[in-house]
Image (cartoon, rainbow, N blue to C red; front, top):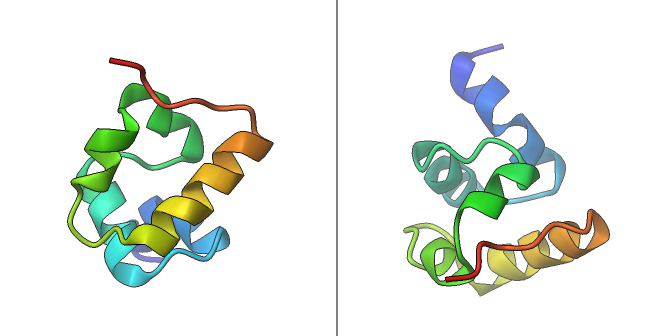
Length: 71
């Protein structure tokens, strides 16, 4: 397994698109729990993350009781 594939594993598991996975990995966000370090506004500015990817991430975060950083 390539290094990029390992880093994208959790995002692939929840069904995010390639561009969305790449944007998250480039932002050093490798797991859903890493999203605690950023705000929803910051997430929305990442290139490659569209409305459907953000909606999917929010559902997974809610299920895991994880919140975005509040600024």
